[in-house]
Image (tube, rainbow, N blue to C red; front, side, top):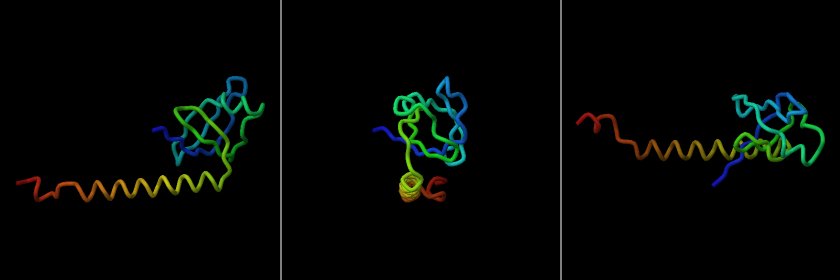
Length: 96
C-alpha cells in the first residue's frame, strides 16, 4: 500500500533541477518536482499544496483537499494509538 502525504510548498529551490522545499506538518524536506514539471512549466508557489510520496511531488492539491487528508490521517493515527494502548500490557502486570 502506498501513501501520499499533503505538503505545503515553502519555496521552489531549483527550477532547473526541479526541486522544491516543502513542509509536512512541521518537518521540512526537499522533494523532486520532476513529475509536476511534466504537467506545467512552473513550480507551485509558496503556500501551495502538493501530494508527496517517496520524495516526489506527484500532483498539485487545493488547500481544502490537503487539510481534509491531513485530518483523516490524524484521525487514523489517534485510532491506531488507542488500539496500541488497549493491547499494551499494564505496568503492574509486566513487573510480575
